[in-house]
Image (cartoon, rainbow, N blue to C red; front, side, top):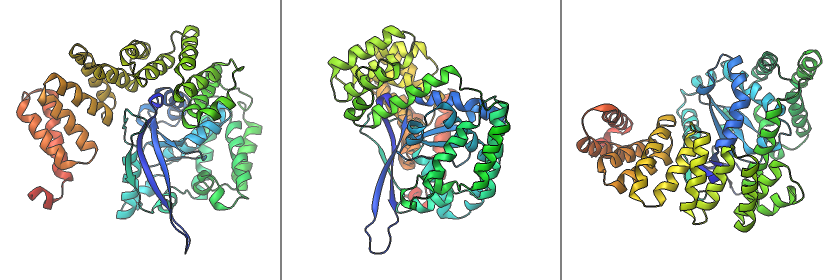
Length: 453
């Protein structure tokens, strides 16, 4: 959840420097947020269906970066910079970009990455990129896992650069998907016009989308001509999308920018839903709970069935030492959106932190469901090991730690912990079978020299 501002994995991209210049480092992080992810999922699902892709098969990733960028890599993985989400003024603009990126996936343009993967360095770059984006949720906004790309930022950019032919093909697919879902291509044209203004800038000042997706006059003319002919060009965005978009932009801005900037942008006399939402986040981050809580309580009173308002209140209380009070709003968020793994994890953490044995069973159940939905969620496994450990169930605690170790590529630890769990748990059932899988995978990943030791 971004409402916990989960910093999942920090990328240290060492930028190539010209001769005589010192190298610089740029720090980027992946984040998770139930509301933002569900908004993007609502936008993208119709496009994926139009492209013949099962919506649930495409993994969406959010990168904290102010620049405009979106790309696909490593199979069915779509990445978005938060700068693109915040700076897109309408849902249609973001949907247009999504349609284009979907065209790259459906057009098989990632196949060349498979060919390139024969090169060990290229394969390592893709592995690092996807490894950083694994479904981790740190549970604390100030914790991240460092992943060093060691001066390979340029190589990553080159790897994700498309040819003019691929770009044209993705554009044609994009307008096809937009038409089949009765959506306007105007947003994609508006995005291209923004990028066109950047072509006169020096390369270092351009947004990365310009550098990895070559923009040509023919491409812009194609979209402009299509907009003039499409029967759906005048179609407005769905009404619910408009508010979802405003809320997503306000929420991201409030969490990622300084509270003073948020309060300057969303002034006190602005009573729009998204403005009050942003101010509630800004005051909570200051922290000024005397102002934050009345704002979120007002939003809940107005929208009692909104799970994200309840989630935010839970976080506000939890992170300000009022964990017992946080449980009720967290539980309400799960009640309203029961199938969301991130909300379940938030509630489970609040329950575990109370150190009340009576709450451990509920936390274990929540985490079991969450790991079933997101088996790569490191925080869920970590919390599960804590929940079982406090209950004295060493076997299940070892199993959960083994899952965590395997995800973190600590294969020796994973094998040891899986062996411990195997000795302590019944030799039947799905957990026992999964333990065998962990042992086998850890053995495959462990080099022979380490295995002998």
